[in-house]
Length: 87
Image (cartoon, rainbow, N blue to C red; front, top):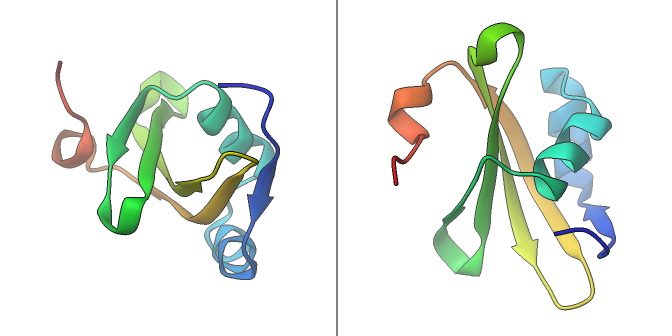
C-alpha cells in the first residue's frame, strides 16, 4: 500500500491537531494498516492498534483514488472491541 501520495483535507488537519494525532501516525496506519474496512460514500477506514500494549485504536477515514489517498478525518478510541473486526 505504498507509493501513492497521501493528501489531507483541511478538516482532517484541523481535527488531527485538535485531537493530538501526529501526521506520521496517520501515514503509518495508511501505509501499514492493521485492518481496512469499507465505509459509507465509497470511503474506507484504515485502522491500527496504537500506544502501549495496543490499548488505543487509531481510525483514519480515507477516500482512495487512483492517484492518491485523501484523508477525510482521523480519531483515536479506546473502544477497540466496537470497531475491530475478527477474520
